Length: 116
Image 1 (cartoon, rainbow, N blue to C red):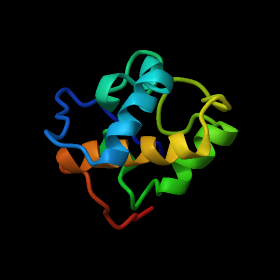
Image 2: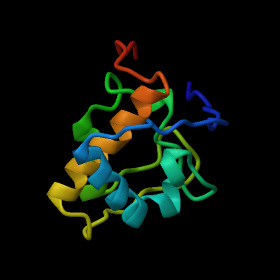
Image 3: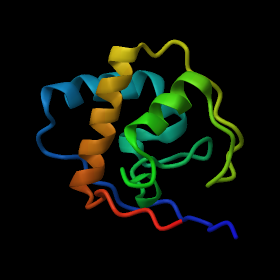
Image 4: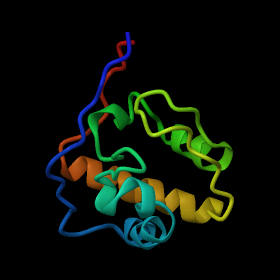
């Protein structure tokens, strides 16, 4: 049974980002925010990335890499398939993931054991 997930209503960005996450924020805003929203809050075009469903125990960093490089079929949300994003370089993607993870952590989203 598919679980319907609600968008977060309040997302906090860390007061201080690491240098890698600061670079990732710039790359995220240029490449991801149009669909996934400012600070990963989601939009009507794409799901929030700062959401418990994307905690590192359920979606490891490699899942973000595959999604950006190969695209991903719709599975948690009803936004349709995500197409590949070939304009995002591997170094940019590493910093984007770092940014997402730091914002997640600032919002209490940390690795949990994935139970199915």
